[in-house]
Length: 481
Image (cartoon, rainbow, N blue to C red; front, side):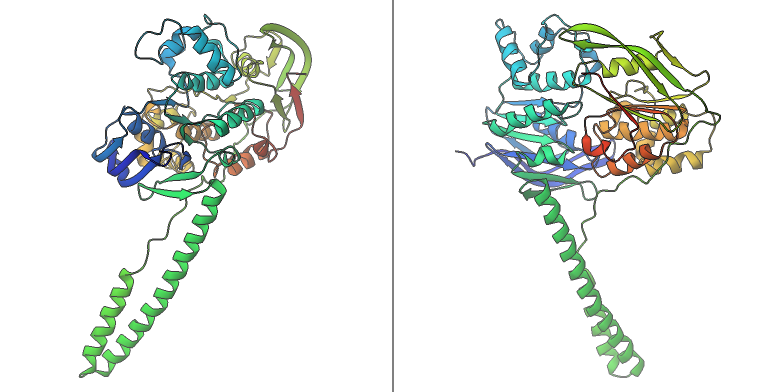
């Protein structure tokens, strides 16, 4: 039966570290539906996936899963402990029992995600985009009844996203996707589950993301109109109450009745749906004393057809010069950035004394055992607590988040911490590797504006063209050419 319910949340609540994530939510997922799960960074979307898969248990209420339902999840990142695994070992971990004839299955799912790989190649040797494809393939190899995808387009190039979109359109089973990519979601979703971070409730909508935005806008307008009408009536009752009270005598009873009517009308006011917050506009200050040529690259390597090719070039960056690096997944963009940061390439020269700000796509330059406060403090020599907390608040890093360890916050919140660190660091050279990954779509125009205004030299890697279009780019290097 196509419309049968396969997952049902019944008055389900969940708390983590004394923080409400869900409060008595009710929703269901029906067979063969393709739905999006949306909400603010850190609201608890990934937590819902873990509750569905059973790796977390609700604080109260029930989660009813159809008997025999198989579930597979493709999370946002490959755990660090799995980075040394070979491709074969990585896929073997997808099963609870040993699969003796696994190679044909691997070949089949790698073809689906448009990736070729040696069975004995280590996971850590793949690019971020290739790892994203491996995550998806590891879920698909299980042939699940319910496929849970957590930010599957992160790190994927245009071809990869097109390939994934086509696959999901034709996918014959149930799928629930977390994504901030509205164009991707609009291509295949039939409904949206929206986790409201203010109420800890799930709102269910029909249609795609654009339909939901329209429905929410109409709802907020309707709620505002209702409250405005009620406010007018309330004021009328209060004015009458004051008038009759001033007359005294028997009219005091009328005044009391008018006041009670006003109080009753106050109770009829609706709580207007609040939109997810966006970060505050910010600038990334330039390191003082920067001048002349800051970066020079005379050669770099690319990977084509599994072969390393060295290319001569003459990349020179000075103040106010922004460079965009282009190329498909696996060609060597991140490798080039890493060689600049680690000074491993003798053909890459950075001016002495230059402070390099690096937004790394996997956040591995953050100490995951640090608290957020420690991580922010480590990016600057001296700052007052008040100024630090003010900057943090601009990136929605509140009292709870700032005390948390980096490993315990969401990927989107890690991204906001990384941007706060760049503001504090005041770099002389800015390098950003896929800075839109994991980030709520409401924040992206503000981040793009900050990068556009950065006064120093900058290297940007991004596959999101709408984001790139908002940033001043002075030169483009396509590694595939």
